[in-house]
Every structure is written in C-alpha cells, then in structure tokens.
Image (cartoon, rainbow, N blue to C red; front, side, top):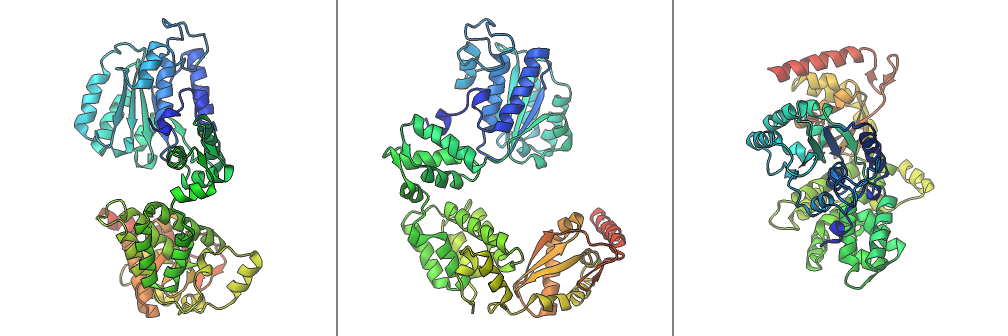
Length: 490
C-alpha cells in the first residue's frame, strides 16, 4: 500500500485542511443534534487535497453504528468509530450501499439513467445510501441534466457527494442544489506538517529543509508530496536536502535557471544538448518544466510589464501540456527551444532568473534594453494606427480596444492593460487576439507578435489614458457588447 493510502484521513479530525475540518464538523454536529443533513454535497478544489477521503468519512459518520455495533454510538458523537461493521466496510471499499463512481468513465446519459433507477432502491445494510461521484464535471450536458432531476427529488435515505477539480464546468442548477465545501490549495506549512507526521510514522529521518523542497514540488497537493517522500526516503530511511533534490532531478549542472539562460541567450544548440543530457540522466521533464515556470513567475512578479517573460511562460505551459500526449518525451521542450531561442544581443541569464535587489532592479529598469527592437513609447504613439488597422478586420474588436492601453512592448510581445473584465474575456479569445496581433505586425513591421492582457482599473471619465479618451468608453462597451452578441447569435 502506498503511503498516501496508508495515511489517508479516517476521521473528521484527521482531515488535513482546517477549513474543511471546520465545515464538516459544523454540518455533522447539526445532523446529530437536529437530524438536518444536506442530501447533496459538492466537494470542489485542486487534486490531491482529500476530497474523496472526506466523502468516505462523511459516509462512515452518518452510518456508524458505534464501537459496540447496534447503534451503541454516544449521542452527539459525529466521528466515525472505525470499529463497527459499517465503518470497516466503507474503509475497505466493501460497503454495498456506498458507491464510488468515476464520472470520467461513466459520463453518459445511460450511465446516469441507470444510477437513477438504483437510487430508488432502499439501502441493504446502511442507514443511508451514499453515491460519491468523482470528477463530476466530466458528465455530458445531458447526463448532468439527468442528475439534476435526481438531486431535485432525492429519496430520503440517499446522499450524493459530488467531487470535482473544475466546479466552473458544472451547470449552475446542479451547484445550487448542493451544500458546497471548497478545498483550498494547501499551504507549504500544511504540506510540511503532513510530511513530518508521515515521516515520523515511517521512521524516516528527514530534515526540515528536505521536506520543504518536497512540499514545494507537491504544488499544493498532499498526495503528490507524499508520493515524493515515498520515492525519496523509503530506501535509505534518511532524507536530506541532497536526497530531496536528487528525487526531483534538481541537478545543479542541469538546473532550470541554467536552461532558461540558454534559451534567453538564443543558444538553441546548447539548449537542445542540455535537454538531451537531462533525458540521459533520467530527469523528470514535467517537474523540470514546473520549476522553470516557477522561476519565470517569480521574475514576472518583479517586472509585470515584461512581455518576453510572459511569452516564455506561455511557451513552457504549452510544452507542459504536450508532455501528456507526446510520443517522444523531450520533443515538447525541443519545440519550445526552437520557437523561443532567437538571437539576443543583450546579456542573458540573470535578466530572467536571477533575483535582484530593489536598487539593482530600479537601475536596470532605467537602462534602455539592448535586446528589443522597439520601445513602449513607439507602440503608444502608433496605437491609434493599430486600432485603425483593426477596424476593417472587425469593428467590434476595434471598439473593445478603445478601453485598453499598451503596457509593455519589446518587438515580439505586447501587453495591453484592459479596463473591463468583459473586454478582457472577449479579447483573449483566439479570434480577437489574432486580429490584433496581425494589425500590430502590419503597423510596426514585425512578425510573430504575441498578445497578452492585464486587467487594470477603470479610468475616470474625464481623464485620458495615453492617446485614448475615456469619455464615451461606457457607450463603447454597450455598443461592442451588442455587436459581439449579435454576431455570436448569427
């Protein structure tokens, strides 16, 4: 049995997230006091946080017979005893009245119709039948509508627990029928605390710094972090910083920051050789990409208008997605290198990945960039021409651009500040984005411009943003919305 399953929470008090423990306690206390129990629950949040574990605990709690069996449970005690026949059956997965359904594999209308037929049957042994539907957002729209009918008129002895990593993909009508508990991404401290408990129980001597490295690599997931601990510490029974870095493939000679230096410098040949060496040494490429994105994000927070960094982040994110389906593991990174390794005249490396002091940052930001062909001022001066070039292509997009302003431009990447979320959402669509990118290329005489957006504050009606007059912007919003919705309706 893997460590994650071995140390899976079995009681409410063992749930790893404080907010979830408190919510479960509140609802279960109410149930055992007044008999009020929601018939449908929605557990939502990132993977690896214990949603299905919490669902099982809920199933045990409402069906627990007490340590002596035959309903010997103390009045008001909402914790499952984990000793009675029902608790043991749920824990082992043998309870016939507790059904776990993977919506990714049973997503069609026929599957839900079958479920609706079974729901009508009374429980065989338990007080309550519990249906735990994992990844419920994977249901087809027809299946979701069929499920909704069951949620609206459920049998009194049936409980539904819907688990999902993407609640926004569920129909609002389904969400509204459920009592929702949100599983927030775990903090570094939460995960380190969990790893310390597991390491102690497994008699693994692990120092705090090593656990912090693994917890950070877990990216908010208890499950992923525990799997890394299992890889790193079970063989030797000891875990230090070097051991944690080894299991993550954090070779100092093959570090993510060194790789980004090569890409930023435009040295495609060395970057490709770098990737080849990583493959030879068996470094996990997905984790390597995660580390690269993390480094770029840290730098971006210090320089939010740097379109070059935004472009590299976008490129690595694409490479990360491609690693799921590629036939050649290193190919996505190689494509990233070829697409982004343009010859740069400036000093590379530290520009992206090195953390600078505030004084250094101010000094460098005051220097003109040697690597870019254009400056932001040129884009601002020609922004009216860009909008004019957009209008023949799509006048609705041109109207949307009136409430934006150029925020960063380096000849390859353009960052626009957008003052209305509605506008930002529309401009980020592939169709609108492409129209603007082509127009910028025509006006500025460059190829392959990439467009990025940042939501800003709405300008005052009497102010001017660069060459853009704020008066009349509200009217433009209405007009642009009407045009877009009319076009979509057609």
